[in-house]
Length: 211
Image (cartoon, rainbow, N blue to C red):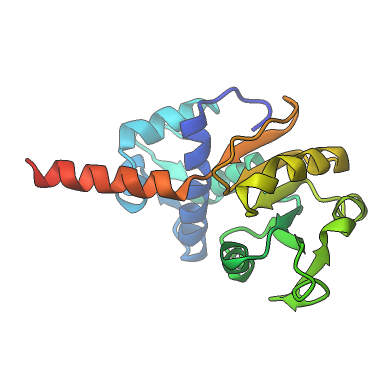
C-alpha cells in the first residue's frame, strides 16, 4: 500500500475484500464478479470497481476477477506475508477482551506482549500473551521489534504512554482512549471511539424510524 496514494475509506475496505477472497479461494472458486463481491461484503459494485482501479488493471470487464490472483495481490498489498508484532498497553476489561480476540482473520498479526501497571496482572500469561510491567515496556518493544501498539489505558495516562511508545520506536498506534493524542508525523495514530460509533448508529436508527 505504500506505493499507492489511495483514499482512507478505500484502505479500510481492503481487509474486507481480502478476507472474502480467502473464503472463495478455500472453497475452490476461481472467478468472481464485482456484483458477487458486492453482495457478499455489502459494498456497492461501483465502489468496489473504483477501489480496485487505484491499483491498476486487476480484472477485465465481462470476465470478472481471478480469485487466487486477486487474493495474492491484496495479501502482498496488506503485507500479509510479513508478521507484524503488536503490543497491547492496558489490560483492563477492554484490553483483556482484545487479548482473547485471536486476530484469526489475518495470519500476519500477532499480539506478542501486553503491558499494565497492576502488579496482580503483570507476570501472568493471558491467552498466550505475556503481561509485563510498564517499566519494561520500552525495553520489550525494542527487543521484540514491535511496530504497533493498541492503547486501552485511562485517558489521563494516554499521552505520557504515547511519548514512551514513540521513544521505543513504535510506528503506529490504535487508540481506544477518548484522548486525542499527539505524536510525530512519522507515527500513525488511528482513533477508535466506541461511544461515538454507537451514538452514530443510534442516530441513524432514529432517522429511519422517523421516515
